[in-house]
Image 1 (tube, rainbow, N blue to C red):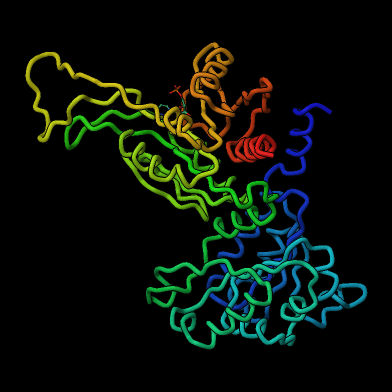
Image 2 (image 1 turned 90 degrees about the horizontal axis):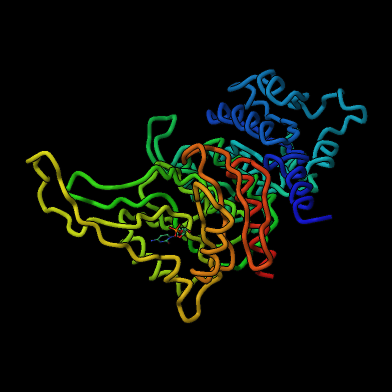
Length: 408
Ligand code: C5P
């Protein structure tokens, strides 16, 4: 089997992050139960089979029918339900599951988990499970900060249960503080991350992403159409693979990937400064940013007023951040990107050699920048490795897999 076949086969088993996975979603009685409906939709969209188990009080907020319609599976509430042939829903459900997630998890349910209570189907199922358990707390800020809750959280964490969130912000009760459940998309992303092989465990990854903004005056400047999507997807994939990731980002509207430390910059010079500061403690540097090749020689202190028919601006060359990092005495493993409009192989191979990189991710820019999918070819010392056209998230996982194979 050649390398492309291997990647395609791996892709099929990892098509959308949760393909082939079975998840038991426990829903307990808090207002955030409405977010659990969206969570089921996202799990299913990512390829998972979902079985929902609700507490009696959860059914006061959202009906079992909602979860049944979204999951396409029977919803379980009653521990005395006779629909399971052996009458043992609490055992059977988790025996087929890869993961149990309780979202939202109320203070009461967390207390039950901490003490091993089993007085309804969901708590019994959690006690009888033989798969990992992730819990997303959701409660009023006072309930969350209460010493009893904090004691219970510490206990369940010590018992090996992973806690997702909670977030802080505006609460359904009108108060503001910590205790709000994470958004469904954040929980789904954390679950996808949970299943990723930890190919970069213990590695420190430094990355750049997005465009740079080169100021002409206080209100204007030069930038480009880089959306930052590829860089942010790659940062998330590296974090999901177990790396400690620092992302130096130009101005973009992307949400910070979960578990990634983000440093915001504007210009190429600021990006260079941030990167050179972090580079000595990095094992891998990935330059995804579309760094401006030139910047205005001077930045006007005041807004430039119109006068005359033409305006001349002098530009000076920006330093090449990637080449500079690759030339450091104990340089990290360096990965570059090459977006070309023609002669991809020649230019990408050229960059590999000229900038002294270990890997170049090349693509032909045909439909402009900012799309959700891409077609890339990986170039390394052994040659060219084309990847199938796919979403930037899937490409990011493939790039991480290839990168980790080169590291080892
Ligand atoms: O030479 P070119 O700009 O095409 O190289 C692209 C690669 O180099 C990308 O990985 C980009 O992030 C990086 N680069 C850089 N600093 C620059 C220009 C490009 O780090 N000034």
